[in-house]
Image (cartoon, rainbow, N blue to C red; front, side, top):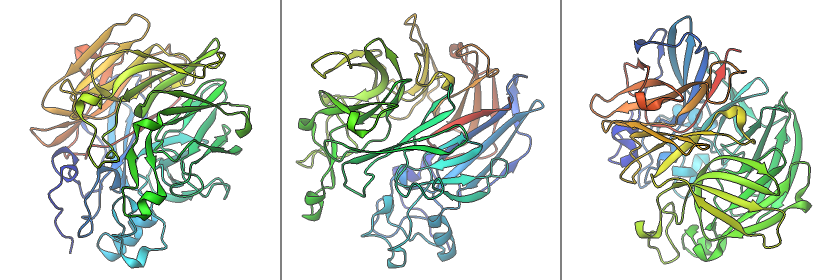
Amino acid sequence: MTQPFPDNVYLSGPMAPSGIECDAPDLVVEGELPADLRGVYFRNGPDPLYPPREGDEYHWFHGDGMIQRFEFADGRVSWKNRWVRTEKYALERAAGQSLFGVLGNPFTADPSVAEEHYNTANTHIVWHGHRLLALMEGTIAVELEPDSLTTVGNFDYDGQIDGPITAHPKFDHASGEMVFFGNQAKGPFSEFLRLNVADKTGRLIKNEMIEAPFASFVHDFFVTEKYVVFPVYPLAFNLDRALQGGIPMAWEPDRGTHFGVMPRNGTADDVVWHTMDPRWSFHMVNAWDEGDAIKVDVCASNASQFAPKLDGTMASVSEGVQPLLRRWTIDIGGSTNSVAEEMLDDLSGEFPRTDDRFMTRQHRHTWLVGDETGGSKFNRLIHHDMASGARQVWGADKYMFGEPVFAPRSMNAAEAEGYLLMLANDLETSLTELMVFDALDIQSGPRCRANLPVRIPAGFHGTWVGTD
């Protein structure tokens, strides 16, 4: 018998578990569904099957991966969702209870899973090489069948990868390549990063091991047409400290922020490290080459509250913990190896996206979600025209928004010519809507909404796969 979930901010309200898998062949749509919106929107996010183990403090990042699939075809929107059948899911389903510690903590896990593979596959879902891959940055990918969402199994590139894969690979739409990395690639607390490239067929063609200045929490990275950039923020891991009973990860601003720049056609021996003042970022927007510089648009803060400082206290709001849209310039032709910063907005924002076809190249349009109070309720959708400097904002206090994902009218359409898809949880009705916006006119609000009969728990990242 399943026990009730405990009182926890990540297990209540818009984040509360759903406990269900559904098939809805024809959702009710309010407004006009665009005739040229044809394809599938996949979204990944945590939806824990069982309550955490006694004594474990649940975290949003721990929930079992649940894939949402919305298909737009013939003037209709269909929806289905399925849990990713990871080893964790299968073992816990058989036991009827949680067995793994939160975030893989071995000290709170059941002894029966001490040697088992911890993978929630809950962070991102991507399409590459005719494979649908569910990603969690701590381990390998899991492949799913794209129509039924049946779990195919772990995907390790024919045994060539046995370590972590980032949840934020980058796609070069000119070459068809997927560029990705693995953090702490030689095991927990290691300072090594692994770079990989898969060609357009999904065949692994590059495998490089890079030694970073120290072990850090690296969630995302930057790729241009010419370079790969590894950001190492001062959210540092320390094994000796952990073995002595201290905190395993701490915000250590004195370490500064480091950027390892490597030519895409180079090797680990070609990496050059650049430095700047302490910064923290979960998600970048895009990166591109500009003369002898690399430009990076990013949502970043001056300090992090993801882990305490060495004295056990958390960074304060006055230290600059709110993520703000910025532009970093890495001068690869200079002699100082420093990084310049330009502030692009004063409105706190996260989950940034662009027209993915312009990934690795200079883009003009950026979308993200924000909270005018600086919190993480995310009830504002924001559009930036990076060329004109214009900003549009649309929102309503009764919602919690998810990540916006762009869908082009066609693969040959101009940048931002298309639609924006966004899941929104109505905090008053406890139901979820899939909103569709004209990407260049979000201030007019959604042109249509597909109403779900249930609430989807707030989640993470998604991808659009067009029929063309």
